[in-house]
Length: 114
Length: 110
Image (cartoon, rainbow over all chains, first blue to last red):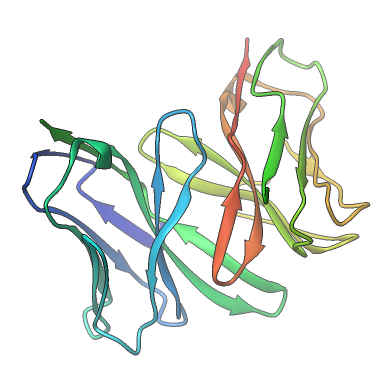
């Protein structure tokens, strides 16, 4: 059972455009929502994260929008650059009795054309 | 440099031949985890560990074993690998606010 669903699976954007990746979750116990960026041949790296008590978080060209009532969140990449070409994973985390666990979405392969 | 080190990076093996993928972290993290990455399926958790001698199953534990005898090390063991375990494997350490991932181990079972 996939608790975090991510779309689209792939995305092609022109340089300077806006890239938008969407995620939806089912479990309302999730209380931390990070995004990871993965370049070919590398492990995923934490990009930006948000807690459900805020609706938006911005770090440079990257913005997370969060809609708690709809159980959805999205990553916006403004002024997309070829160097942003990577696979992006949304994730959700919550505390459990045995600690915290991250549940990942399926991933989005972003290609930014020059 | 804070890092998670996995070895080997690439491995081709035959069905049924036991293998171990090592993972070591130098950040004194209590939490460590193994994931496998397959196209269209994202990152799926295999096993995780909250501390020495404390391990638990993730979402896809079948066919895998782990051990946590030292805080820094968390090896992944495939007792009898099968072709459906061909995948890209990642070890991670950290906690609630973020994980540090290793560079991955690409395993092919023929």
